[in-house]
Image (cartoon, rainbow, N blue to C red; front, side, top):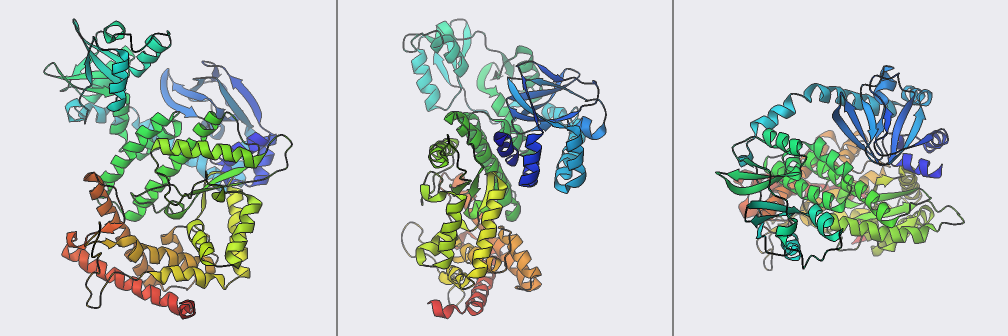
Length: 617
């Protein structure tokens, strides 16, 4: 049951349990396979005897014949009946061929009683389901009834003449990133979708360059006037069993409402957005959702969302994309690993302090078991190339420094990672300190958490044996001074692309993150987030409560200013970066920024004295 052990280590809430507990559970699981359309259990039947864990495929929960929830691999169901000891309140049906793990009720009850995190997970899921059940038939429908189609941001329709070929339509659809083309016919407008191209042309062996649009387009197109509501459009789409509907204004086409536009409207709801990411099955779906996230985050920035919470939210969403990318990569590869592994995120993603300037900083660790028919090193080399390719296709930019698992330097067995980490700490030469600065905010984003926990423990043990390492790390925090002159004026770039601007990361954010990390590692603090590290340093007496508060607020202000300028640059069609123009700040913001730089200067002086950094100059 090695696959079951690994699988449990990657999904909630089983990843909260110990390795020993997961192994025991894996050996007690039953495995059932359900064909597409097969009923797993029925609403109102006798109370369930098992917790169902979806290993692969998808399952639909229905209540009184109406869809309640779609479930995908890694999700649990049947817990409502187990917890209440009542008959199931819904019918579970396999949407496609599915494999399900079954966990006995007695084992489930034992875990609920013994493990607080496990119990809290299912208690919260039950509470959310009850709340959702109460709201399901009111607030969502009412909200859709209030939205007019003309108020939605629909893209202008792509239209071609029926005499054009399918090949010409495909080129236009790719160029315009469209999933359809409207076709002008003698009798009116028709439509050709991506699915039509596959079914009516390619699947029949026809040549796209020879087939005319008029011969394969669907006619007529279902349409609705723009003064109707989103709810009315959804009802019409459901009635006709279609995913797209033409929107008219005074009988003139102004756009096409697609199911993904409805997702876009609902994406203001983070829970729904996360749900859509978690069940996405293709790179195309994830790429589209990735674009929605970017738009949503910009809205949050312009509405003044707390930068600490915003950075955490961006990181959480990115985590979801990265987790989903694993499943897609495994499907592409066509083989699963036979050993536990973990994908780790580093840097700002590791600290859950992401900005709008994201790239990939990731690493991989795996357990190198001696198996006869499986070579972990060769497998993870293949997997890593596919995984990074998937992330790039979703929209994650590559790391300029090549800190990605496709680079073998950042892909090692557990033993190799422990040896290299020991070398970095024992021999703090410049290249090793650079690697530490990149790596030492690592956290698990997918896979076996115990591998990451053991590596963190190894880091702590190695630092305890080599306390002289910390000052070398602290040097990074004092290397760049806050860009504030003697007369409290800003020191800006004097030439080049960023003339008149300040690098807010180098002169402000970097000194705080690096200095706080050095202090946290010295004290054996496990938290990666800078705000949490500062709080722990205050509790440990390293920083006074008053100074810890000042340092957190200084850091919060810097993150907020960076978000503000990055969002503005994106809005202007520019690439976000870490530069700000102080001339574009209000008088109050300028004053606060100068105070923040003063706090950072004091923090650097504190580090300078604490670690006697004069000897490292």
